[in-house]
Structures are given as structure tokens and as C-alpha cells.
Image (cartoon, rainbow over all chains, first blue to last red; front, side, top):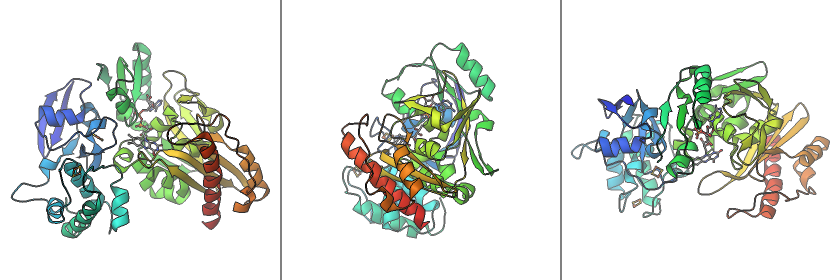
Length: 157
Length: 266
Ligand SMILES: Cc1cc2nc3c(=O)[nH]c(=O)nc-3n(C[C@H](O)[C@H](O)[C@H](O)COP(=O)(O)OP(=O)(O)OC[C@H]3O[C@@H](n4cnc5c(N)ncnc54)[C@H](O)[C@@H]3O)c2cc1C
Ligand code: FES
Ligand code: FES
């Protein structure tokens, strides 16, 4: 099918198979490989991106469902020279080990912080329910999100 | 994933026609159950009919003693709705504890109710609140809607358009979540309509049901101690790697008591 999608601010007109997943459009078609696939049961959250401003699992949506929509991926929030505050916080707090879960964690964390006023550690853990990490034991991820909240200051995304 | 044709109709009537003319079609709502199923090749529909473009299926209206939720309304919208929070706080609370945030940002009430997963949360509310399920063809009472494991009163091709929840004086929902998925191992909603208590249970059996014995005991005496001696037989209950039937029967009692305690505290 023919579709239009805005990804990280750039508009694309694409002809995709009806059964293509959003994550495959991002990774295979647009080569935005920062969005990861960690499971086939919709549980790990490594594939989390923002669709029209909300965190979603891009492995559990068809590309067609994002027709006309706007997607932000990990590539769209900062650059190596100018990291997003949440990325800086993950680096400073050692909020990652292998890094596989990190793009999804960061995309979810930005959405979580932007939608709440003042999270504590418990609320961060609840808010990350849909993101799994096999390495860190979550402790430093929670620290990083709290630090990211501080660095984000207001609700800038 | 298997091949299929995707269509996005703009009206309920168009969706019904597309369904009628396809070989082996399926409706797509939020996709949070259907897409994982398709990814694992557990289903092979010829046509996927996306309901997201049908404006009349979305939205929440409160009035006439009822909360009406359009079938395409996402879990996050119900959880965040100030109107639902004011009218039936237990319903907003239930929606806010489904799965995780990403699932709630996509999943819809119509998809959840149509699917009748034995561990889904909304069915407990449909049963406990005596909701009415409205479709493109008729109205179905919440008491008659859930039939069996993944089986409802819906005919093939019938589309849920909205769910109407009568507003109780008070209600509370408690679930024992599976730690991985957050689906209910057992969930119980207790609702008080001017002294008439209704109790809906999910997770325990093949589909959601009313716990009449518990209702009778609470109608005689609305207190947590009223349930001290209650017997919940485990015959026909789900018995799987998450919990035995016996344990689920026990959880029904515990979740019911906690829900009553919340209800009386509120
Ligand atoms: C990781 C994960 C955790 C989850 N945890 C929970 C949980 O804790 N509690 C819980 O209750 N659920 C949970 N879910 C399921 C989630 O709530 C789904 O959103 C829901 O079950 C299905 O809704 P949907 O809108 O995604 O429907 P879809 O997946 O799009 O559709 C589901 C089925 O319903 C049919 N259908 C959809 N809409 C209609 C309609 N209007 N009329 C007729 N038929 C229709 C479809 O044809 C399909 O067969 C979880 C899902 C995931 C992936
Ligand atoms: S890849 Fe695991 S949830 Fe999407
Ligand atoms: S850092 Fe390895 S999975 Fe999270």
C-alpha cells in the first residue's frame, strides 16, 4: 500500500507490503537500526518509538497503522555531539551494559517523564513495566531516569 | 508473517461490507492481541480490516447514569479521562493497570472485550457493572456476553461499537497480576448499586463470570468479614503454569475481600 509517514521530522512517501510491521519499515527500509527487536511476544519494549507523541511498541503495529502519522526514533532525539538529556543521564549513571534495551528504555523514559510531574523511584519502575533489561538489574536505569527527569527540567522533548 | 490484504474503512457499514465480501477476514483494533498472534503465525486471515479510521467508534460520554466508551477507545484514554475518573474511578483504575504503558497506548476496549481472553481485565468490569455491549446489529447484556475461552456472543462479522457502563454508587477492582505480562491471574470487581452488590471475576475460569455466592453474602452483609466462610469451588477453573485451579479459587476470595475493603474505604 501507499503511505505517508513522518519520521524524525522528515516526510516519506512509501509503498509497503500490507503486512509490513512498523519496526521493519524503520529498520529495513529507512535503515534506522537504533530501534531494536528483542522478542516476538510484544513484551520486551526494545522496539519502543513515539507515534504521534506516545510510546508504542513498533513490533506490534503495522506500518499501515502509522499512515499519516509522525514517528520519533532514538535517532531523532539527539546527536552524538548534542545528546538528549535522557541520553546524557543514561551515560552519566551507567544506565546500560550491553545497550540492547537502551533505545527502548530511553524512548519510554522520555514519554514517561514528559507525562508526569515528579516521579520517584517506584513510579519509574512502574512506568518501565513494558521494557525488559537482561543486564543491569534495573537499578542504574532507575537512577538514570530520575537524573534524566532532573536534566529535562520542564517537559521538553 | 503470512500475506493478507489490509483495508481501512471509514464507517462501520463499510467495515461490515468488507468483512462480508472477504474469504477469511479479521478486524484489527489496537492490534495488541492480534498482531502478536499474526507474528507468531497462529492465524492466517486473508484480510485485515482496520477499525482505526472509523471516527464514530472512538470517545467517551458520561450522562444518564452511564459511562459510554466507544469500542476504539484506547486503554490510556479511559485511564486518563477525568470524566471516567469522576464517574467510575474503579474503571479508570482498571484501565490504567492493563499491561504496560505501550500496550495501553494502543490497545482498545472493543478489542479486549471481543477477544474474551480469560485473563483480560475489562471483562470483569463488563460483568460486575452490568454493562451493555452495543454492536452494529444489537445490544447484548454483559451477563450474556462472555461464553467461553475466547468465545463471546458476537456473530462472525458483528462489530462492537460501544460499551455502556451503568454508574455504581461505588466500585473497586483488585487483581493479582502475572508478574511478567500484568494479565490477571485473578481479578475481581465489586460494585455497589444502591445496596445491590454485583461481583465480576476474571482470570479464574474460561471467561469472566458473576460470583453469585459472593454477591449473596455481600448483599446480606457488606463487609470483609462477610466473606470469611465463603467457599469458592475450583471446578472448571483454569489450571496452568501460572497457577493451579485451587490457588485461583483461593485468589478469588482474597481479591474479593481486598476489593470490598477498598470499596468500603473509598
Ligand atoms: C505485553 C502485553 C500485556 C498485556 N497485558 C494485559 C493485561 O494486563 N490485561 C488485559 O486485559 N490485557 C492485556 N493485554 C491485551 C491488551 O489489552 C489488548 O489491547 C487487548 O486484549 C485487545 O485489544 P486490541 O485493541 O489491541 O485488539 P486487537 O488485537 O486489534 O483485536 C483483538 C480481537 O478482537 C477483535 N475485535 C477488535 N475490535 C473489535 C470490534 N470493535 N468488534 C468486534 N471484534 C473486534 C479482533 O478481530 C481480534 O480478534 C496485553 C497485551 C500485551 C501485548
Ligand atoms: S521487540 Fe520485544 S516488544 Fe517489540
Ligand atoms: S543493558 Fe543489556 S539488555 Fe539492558
